[in-house]
Length: 329
Ligand code: ADP
Ligand code: TRP
Image (cartoon, rainbow, N blue to C red; front, side, top):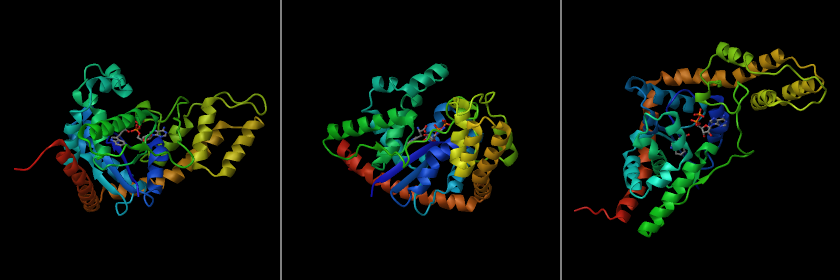
């Protein structure tokens, strides 16, 4: 059985893009693969969150993971910083990662452009830490979106380089895992591009009904079709893409027909879309609240995840240390 691994940084709440693009699929594959899902709290330090918010952010993502259906009985669910073997592997992989290849990473160049006053070494070696997350469990499959593909490629480069350098096939080369039906790109409500935390165009699993309705009612539209069966502009397509994710086929068909005969009323469409989003997210929100406040449960989940992750990463690190030449006196 192949091992699947994925992580998410502990910044902010999870939005519909995270849910439909990633989390919902993770929930579905838990019986098919040996799964590791973790919260990348060390990665989040590259942007220096305040210590007062640090723990709550981790707890938030953890509660949202669990509420959405990740099952700690099936999968190892853990906090990155709870597994020191990952940090140890990070040190060792830093010795074989070249500064030049890290500087050429698109995400790094973007961060430098956005934030020229905070170009810390952690940002440069972000892909090395991510490779350590993956290689620590010798995971074969890592479901990532387009923006993370270059990082995954670097993980393969480091795996290959390490194996060659030490003459041992310790690390398999991790490959992307594309889910059934292909990758979905969840659009934002502002009519431009994908839903994302930093784009301010998202609906969050944690939003309440009023917030969701308000956001959807404000979604960007156009002035409406003027000719029957005209092609849809992107802003309208985006609303239909969201609708296909949350609504019944009959609802999608109904509004498609209304578009085609030019009788569509965007207010009606949005009201329906908001209601259907709520049907998906409000039950999850209720669970988030319950789980977030259940410290005893969370601490059990984290302890069991830590144990499983440390056992797996520990086994890898003994091979790695031996290959590198560490020996006990
Ligand atoms: P953000 O873009 O809000 O910073 P992240 O990069 O933390 O989100 O995303 C974490 C995971 O969620 C990734 O695997 C990514 O592929 C998925 N994801 C994020 N936004 C979307 C989206 N709009 N559509 C599909 N998947 C998404
Ligand atoms: N860099 C990933 C992101 O921003 C999060 C992440 C950290 C990750 N380590 C990982 C994803 C290992 C997959 C595997 O989305």
